[in-house]
Image 1: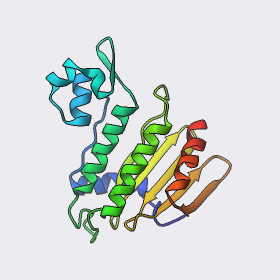
Image 2 (image 1 turned 90 degrees about the vertical axis):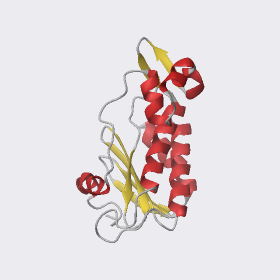
Image 3 (image 1 turned 90 degrees about the horizontal axis):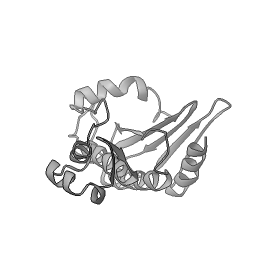
Length: 184
């Protein structure tokens, strides 16, 4: 297994704790709350025009459309991009500009590839030493990992019960990988 993927799940919470990163534990209960969290706008503005921000109201709960999913993931990328040098306590660097640009593109492509009614979850987005991002999707027994390295290159790991497929590729490989993952 590529070093980019070793120990990601087990070490993620320690790294995030050291870096002061927190993650919402449950979904927001109202559209205004969801929009405020994801987009950083005033709750009053969100309540006044929820559809303008990608929220469909159903009773008192908010259902996120792909645009809200996109906004939440972009917020996470922004949060990680602001990490200081040494965020993991072992000489890591803040995410590189190339890694940030590629991470944003991964979020855009994921949000465009996933239908609004998809029952799967958004990816876990985490910092990756020395200066990149890690995306991790899980859908039942299928998993997809994409490492966005500091030089902007991508490393993929597609895991199924039958086999693991690991490869380095450019951004053009992302859409087919996402389609295979979403199709199950």
